[in-house]
Length: 219
Image (cartoon, rainbow, N blue to C red):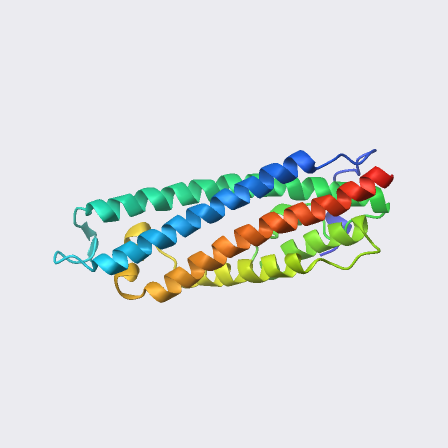
């Protein structure tokens, strides 16, 4: 899982990543807000209680008309999903830039091949540590005299908690609505973990970028 699959050459000169960092951090904060909104709507569903007509998914492919609250949850959930996709794109652009910069600054190839910047998030098992490893490797190559910031581990711990919660709460919006009526605890825990990971991720992006920017200024 090392740099054997590296295909892109190191940049001749490292490029500042401040603008990409602002974009990624802003996208992370917006995504966190989206997941908090989702949690708020789930609390509203829980407090409203299951309608007398039953769950939206009635079984055997039958779905009853949604209430206004349930319909608004669909909108909030969809908005959160769109924000998450945009955030992923912004974050990956930032991650690729700081990884390339770290390679140019250190004069050594990255520990993880470039393909893992993308696949490391979705390939089972390795997605439990590869993304953190890529960030940590880029930071250590950029600031070898510094310890890895604690925010990197906080971000990754919360992300794993949210990932686990997402696995346990898989399903479409109607099935999530059904759980909100009776099993809101796991839903809220997963939502808050993802929101926390987004906030910690924004701080992590700023911290890693600041260290690399300081090194670039010295170079």
